[in-house]
Figure 1 (cartoon, helix red, strand yellow):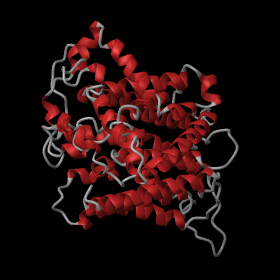
Figure 2 (cartoon, helix red, strand yellow):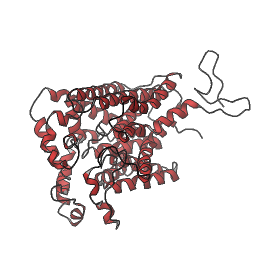
Figure 3 (cartoon, rainbow, N blue to C red):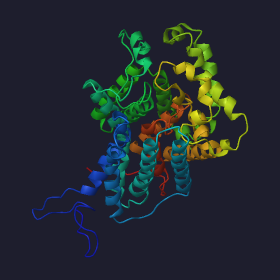
Figure 4 (tube, rainbow, N blue to C red):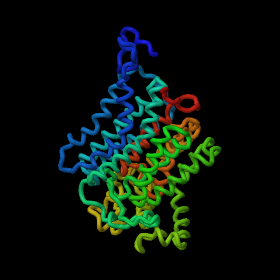
Length: 457
């Protein structure tokens, strides 16, 4: 039982549960609000996708209100700063991203409303992560926040499924790819077209977060944590991946789960090497796809001659065009061209024909976390990302004795492996990027490497 706060300190339900006049425990409002915002964070970040560009900025800004409320409540509690030095690098990295959003709006690569909204989102994410994970002195509450963050991708994926069942469609025109058959479901004897989910922002937009949700739930099942709910999460996430026919999400999600669970010694030593190898892993993938394309399984998974499996459904064409821009030395390459740098740099002019049936083919991303990062925030931003990714993966590996930290490790690793073939986690995919930002602050908290304690029940 918690004792009441001393006279002169913030007391009542905002800080901790305490006994009321009937001897029962009052609800701790602040932990519930913060955990709720973390739980729905990715859904709130992606919610504006459902709106049209005709609405005023104030309508979009409503999605930021829950973050503001959670931050204010956290600021009213008793802070206790416990941060590792790498948090400064994380803040600097987010600052580059915010500046890139503003720069992108001034050169016409994205609208002013979108740029200001994203800059506000990323800034609030930094504040929320700082207060919830670095300044929260109560271990039990911090553990609840970490657990809520683990479930955030699952809630986002489930929200997409519910909206899809209700017949909600994303604002604007649907991707032309939605008429393509879902090859993986066809192999299972369920012929159907690929699905565009409401908050995906595109055909494959929800895939990386669905993969993170899948491996997070699988980790909870393996650790016997909230097993029934985790099994449901596995089924929902797997359905989404199969419905959008995201082969990369399924493959790299399985690889991330295997690396974390089958090789515990490698996990404890740290999986930071994945971050270091990110720039060269696409070459390995191309060689593997070339060999797979010659097999019977490869021919069944191939979606067409122009974007065949051997080219990673056109990704090698995209990468080649971006590389041709980045190999010509320019001062902009140091700090990037701003968000949607593929437009400003002219790189997308060389591969836009691959997306000629879509409303805005020039805005299609570089389909690589490394290349998109360089285009947006330059080689300096890429260096920050790789150092941070190595630090976060290594830190979570040391904390993976706890189920929540193990789940975050697996989900984050899945995102970066998918980043070989998609621009995740970058602002091109706000849901996966928001998850990555919050995970950074979980991993940059200072303290002994014993893991995050589980909340009491």
